[in-house]
Image 1 (tube, rainbow, N blue to C red):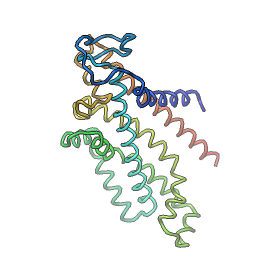
Image 2: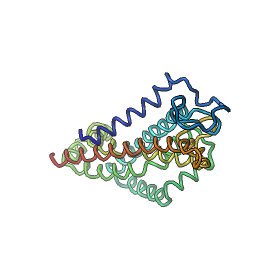
Image 3: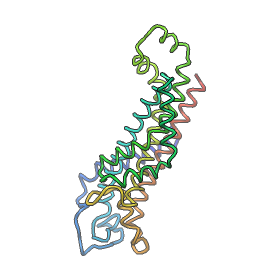
Image 4: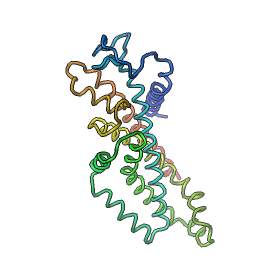
Length: 268
């Protein structure tokens, strides 16, 4: 494995451990107010400093990271599955189903994805589950188009035509023969989807349309610090750093996976 992929994977694992395991051993609460520790710079007592209410930033980064990662992974799972099901169905079944699929995808892509996301989020009371659903609804088109194109290619292979002539059930053909061949594209699209969903949630929370207090995410913590950035840089810097590390690592990992799968296709 190349060094960039190893570093990216190490960062992702490290962030996951920090977010989900470290809070079990960290004594500070993300909700505890301390009027005697308002806007304290990073120190040994508060490694990432405190915010304008005296709350420990490291504890808030950990707690907010749980929400951000759950939304990112949950949204990517749902969006990728929707894209997989619709894409492979359109590529294999073709006909009217494929025509309807193209119309729906083109209709969704007519509007910029983030503005469509803003429109949906502004009319729905935000929660973790709602954000997962909303981001999923606006994030499945790219995966589905890739899956559809590859499914078209697979459907033209002689062995698929033989199985179809033999009247093997369509579901069996899809799950037994299509899915293994589509797994590389699905995995790459999923990793891209996680990073995109984290950025989408962060953008919504930064604009005040994401998770609502007392819940928090990296985006909402980043938003809290925008008005005091000149006097307390750490309030916005650390959540921004976490968003950057995770999304950049996922993108590098996706690039590596794509290169790996492309090499296997050339060899085959």
